[in-house]
Length: 440
Image 1 (cartoon, rainbow, N blue to C red):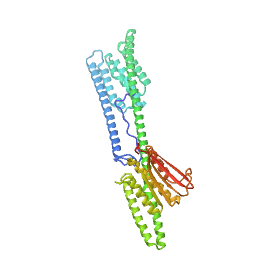
Image 2 (cartoon, one colour):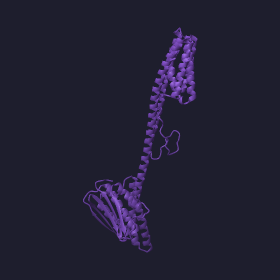
Image 3 (cartoon, helix red, strand yellow):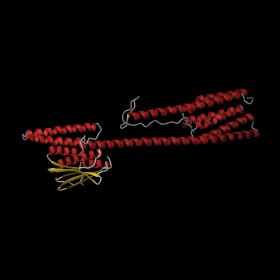
Image 4 (spheres, rainbow, N blue to C red):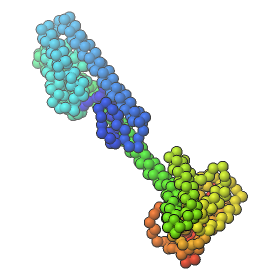
């Protein structure tokens, strides 16, 4: 089983949004360049930490191997119980096996690659048995060999089997050194049994720590994925909400102004065809005023601010000006009655003016009424706008194409209010209310 030397933090998810150009950062739709730079920086830091962890781990393995080889070399040189030639061969074999096979296997984290791990384990078992056969003092190499077996093999079961095999090989080495007497065999069995128990206990403990680390890493990955998915959903919702807001603003401002311009142009053409030059000139002045207002509203939308038509003037002045302009454009008489004794929040003023614009536009397009009434007042803590006409009416329950009434209802619902529409043979009434204690 592999005990990784350093935590590997996966890179950020690949986010679609444009072709990937080598050496350049691909920015997805809805994301900012700074956020993508942060993600790239995080990935680079994660890869650097992983490489640093692996380097530190291999450095300690190299130190352990060097210490083991030095100790075995010293024992071979000074111990009378060690065959000098056999000990030297065992030390050289361990060094070659470390450089050629075992170290590359650990460095590649190749415990998941069964051939590399098993080959390393077989070589370690053979070298261990041969070294002890050359001299019993060389059995100290088990302190280095057993942890390697736990590192290079892919599972706990194979690591336990390899440790058992190493202990058997070492016990056989003791038999070659001390002879096959009963006492010698019992000593070898007892010694290797203790070594095996200690190795398995330590290996299982380290394995449990590694499993806990892997589980923690998996949970962190899941949490990171969930956070990424939540961020993507929030971006999508924010984008959709902004689109809906812009749709409402465009419908209630520029679209209404353009509709008025179309009607005024038709009236001007009719006046010119009938030879009424004075009427045509008057209509042209109205067209110019309406076009200037539409231009102002479009610039305001580009500047990302809601245009209510309210400057320094108050709401009453704005509604009266709206009624006068509508009467000039449409020829429909508008009676404006404003009775306010409280200050209305600016966001509420925007919603109320938009409602008045939409209701008057519907009167011009659909009602056929010669006059309209617009009133604004306060009632039980609410500000209430009523726009009525004496036209032909319609069925409020019927599905009507367009964005107008639905957009108004959604706008007022977001501000905590509501819009009611009643209609019949004697006209239509649009009633909109907003609570004064809640700002949109």
